[in-house]
Length: 254
Ligand code: TMP
Image 1 (cartoon, rainbow, N blue to C red):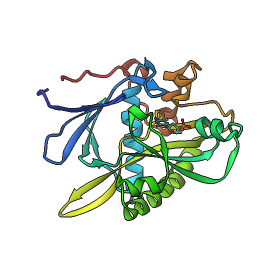
Image 2: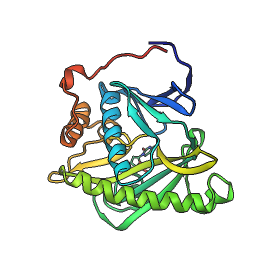
Image 3: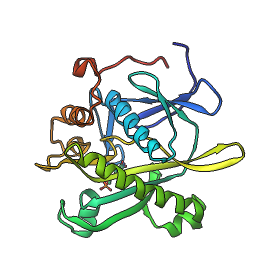
Image 4: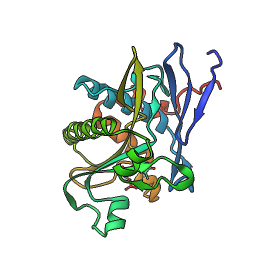
């Protein structure tokens, strides 16, 4: 494989220059962090599984006309994506109380919320991704009001669709985080879904037992992390053919 220019390295992914202008290669690592990288570890095979799971979910979303940055999967750990200008906001949707909302508002984990709640966090590691209101987002120009209308509209559609999709395979979608970007094409700008959707940024509970099948197993030292990610992929019908033996996947040249 030819050497490629690395553009960005995040906690769980690396972005390389893509083969054509306007494209990037998104490489999924096995590295896991939590609590703003105070906790670090490796989840063997996570990158391979998240690559597949995110491919699957973004493809399904594209089928219902949710625009995404995803173009195609290239190999076990890499996917080709459209280059977008990332909006520096983490959009969190919650259906059931868990994690920070349970702590902040004293709601017992597992309580169904009166309706789905959308929250925003400013993407800034130094500040620990503080929660912000739409007022801050528009006042500081991170996104403008029409961008926010698109983001909320897309987020609620994604939540409805993914809730149903996961329920169909015996998984409750408790909450999840999305990122959006601006795609510039033919003198036009569109807001599209970016980043990834995987057990790293969703809370997924077994519908029958409420067992956690996501990164909370790592955050909270619950064990059986690899097994949980594999089970999500298995239920979605996308476990790589070779199964867990092949989870390490090929290494990329950097
Ligand atoms: P929280 O309850 O810790 O605020 O997390 C809400 C959801 O957002 C949960 O599904 C995990 C996801 N998340 C991320 O993807 N990245 C983050 O940095 C944080 C804090 C949460």
